[in-house]
Length: 150
Image (cartoon, rainbow, N blue to C red; front, side, top):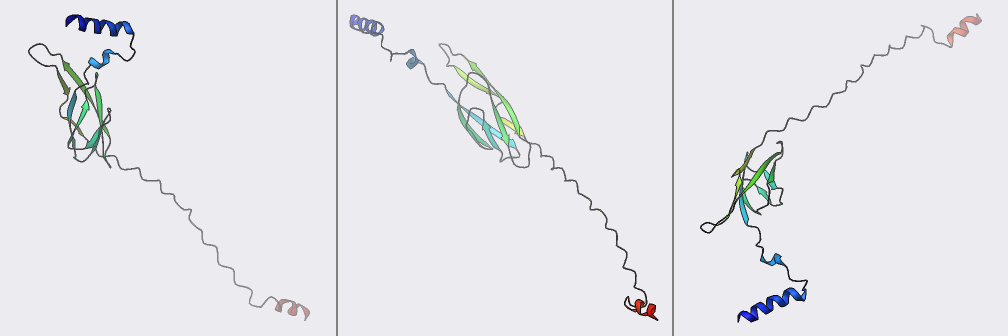
């Protein structure tokens, strides 16, 4: 039986089969649960890895090789971004490998947004009152030539 297995393995490597890859022996990265909280609650939280939810909540993300970030947003509040570190502890014969995130839970305290600046109120120029038309002479205008005829 050993000869058959050895010949089969040798045959695969000698055949140059392009579909054979060592990638099939790699395991998928473990999923880690990330608890997300905010003050005030109800903020939209989105990880830089993609998943997001409305706080307080929990999302599962594939454990990245390095850290990631979580951005919290809410109307009338300034957005906040929290960096998250991924700490990997390799396993040995007696214990499995572990993946831990710091901080846990990931939380942010959102600050109220500053009120929008009030627009500069334009002042209208003051209207000056036009002087009332001067009263006409006591005599009507056509009476003046008649007086001149006399």
